[in-house]
Length: 136
Image (cartoon, rainbow, N blue to C red; front, top):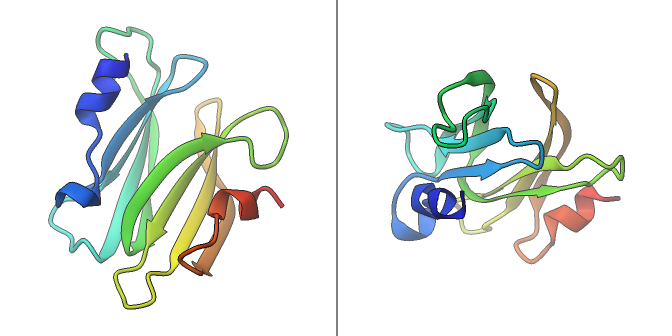
């Protein structure tokens, strides 16, 4: 699955829209993608969850998804157990396009067949570590 992950991951660094998939510990697959046709500096991103029932076709069984507003470009997506409950949250970090390059971070729980926001930080200084701040 690592090869699939690497081949589908794109980012703002290469000038394209952000697109990343990740296989969760339970075999489900989550995809985070900026929306086409929107400016890079503002718009939305989607989070889509797939069952991962067939590893050869990980995107065949869509489970649920949400669309989230963004101010800036998606810079990074990772998994981290920010609340210490033993379950990793999906962390989406964005960077504003303005001169401040402010960071924002949102943590989403991927519980059963649901995706929901559990924490949000906005207007962070460019050098701050959003993940460490979410752990507090």
